[in-house]
Amino acid sequence: GAHNGLRFLRVWAETKGHWQLFAMIDTPVVVRERASVEAQSGQGDCDNPCRTVPYKPKTAMDKAILKIWQETKMIEWKPNAAAWARYIGDEFMIINNTTIRTRPEREVIAKRQEQSGVGTPGDPILSMEIHDFGKTAAVMLSKHFPVRGGKPYNNLRVWALRDGRWQLTISQQSQISAAAPVAAVAGK
Image (cartoon, rainbow, N blue to C red; front, side, top):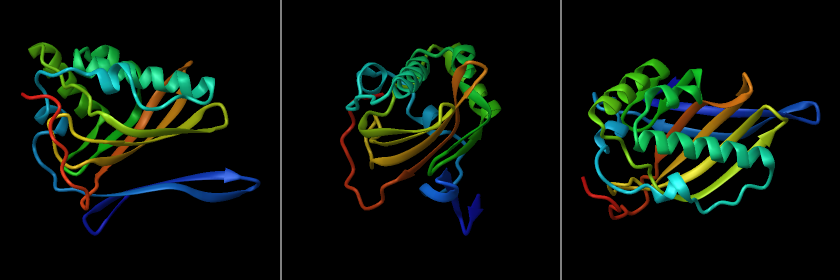
């Protein structure tokens, strides 16, 4: 939802017959024309998060979700719009401090990057955890810093198992305003 210049996401879970707030994130959004994935596109390696992350999955479900997510990061780095869309739910939204994009809007960006041959190395992970809800839903919580440098941010992602594959349904990020900026690990 949106309220007073903030986008908010609340994830509720039913446990033992009653609903409880599991996770929440608030993001002040100043909408800009270019999405962060476009602004950060360019050269750079993507070891963390494309090949390695400082997280060890606890369940087979977590392992499968992490594998799919890392595939999407690899696909964003070496752009392939059709492959990326396979793992994204129809209702998908990505919300961060600079943009709000739906699946169709994000696909346009992916196609542009694929045509130009210039993708975006993923933002390195500082910490991560995945929480399973039954066999068809999960929440991924992670802390990142921008590959081109800047303030770290928190990310909350919701995953759903549909049509026999894990799909990302929402990804919301919020910059940690009190954190010190981190140096870039990749130049343009």
